[in-house]
Image (tube, rainbow, N blue to C red; front, side, top):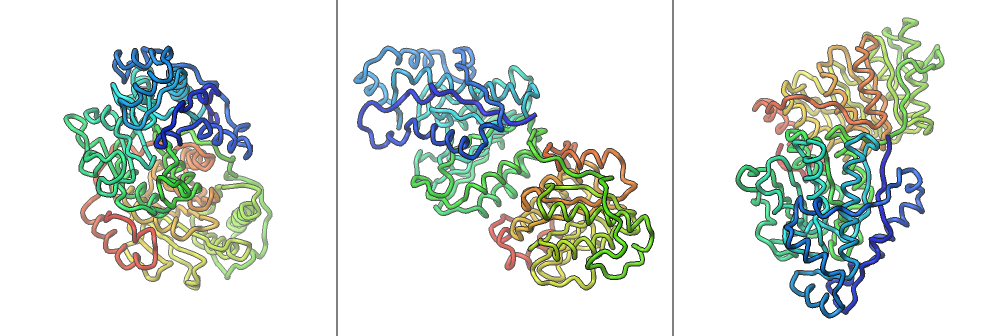
Length: 540
């Protein structure tokens, strides 16, 4: 399974037929430029191409009123003056004789993508659509939007595929008030939007775009607005929003499908948005979403346990380790270093290696030193369980040691952090999202070592989620070290997440204990001055 790309050239047919400075930016080139960019980078060829179909009027009726659909159908026969007069009845909208056809294709593209993902034909996909949809409401066009494609897609997924929980993430720089209105009393759809707000001085100038608009009735708490009250938000702000606001809610909601309203006016270079987040940031945001809803994300096959490797009599950069004196341990170390070399020279993107339990700490020590001496500029080691940091590892800023499972929360130095393993699902997620990932993204490692030491205490889904999330900071370069007596189930699930599949569900959600919360807050305090991603984070 791969990635679908849904498109139809007819969606470029509608265009502005009169002078209107407000609407002139909604032009066919918005769509063709995106497609050309995919083609120039060779990405279109790597996708399963699907030609968009028109949505039926019954499908449009999942969200929109029959009267509104009939009104739009009638625009096909109107002249320019009539179209202009009708357009003037709405806010920032223009109609064209081909608008109805284009808008039905936009909705149909979204529905095709949902069907392809839900039937297992692809893991994920991108629908290039025009006109956009997230401002349109049940009976009104708004902000260039005619039919609300993402809302119809969510209702379609529930009706046709029997889903009970859908997450909609709207990262456009404008608030998708249409989507919010449609689902504000529906607890089966969690709607998250960040948007430029500036205390209601930015379009659409709505009071309900503020953070205290959280839904109503049964949907109370299922609308999440993150209003930006200043411009210039950058990568750290966007990542912090995901790690500290969206993802904790999303994991508890446990969606069966994630839909993204992916307006890129929130990226650097857009004159309307005036934000500073780079395109690379959106790649990381997408990868974070792919750990939800059994996301089917593509990847490169990792090396797995048992990969052949040379037997090294005297491993480079190794201090004398009694634990490595046995042939079995030395053979395992050889395989680890073989994988490490292939990771660093780009032959593989990730790997798994097994080590004898008594030799785990010594193997990790050697792996860190070899990694730093063979090309890694910054190496992050996440050691889970009773694994002590090598005593003579220097604090030179090139390695960050993070131990999960220590006896107490402590930060002996900026690059040496220990935290106990929380006992609840919520505590584990809080530790990962509010500490591990902010540190990892701030450090920007070339390579991540994940070591599951003896009696590490993680359940298989927890180990899989931790490993999957750590693929992001290092561009997928993750080497997982596990006990040779680990279960085949753990080996299999780690191999799958390193291959790009989503980790399994963590199971029933349980809140973090007050003790775990307090320990994490105490630990973060002294670390915040050194780590930017902790500085912009909300309290855990």
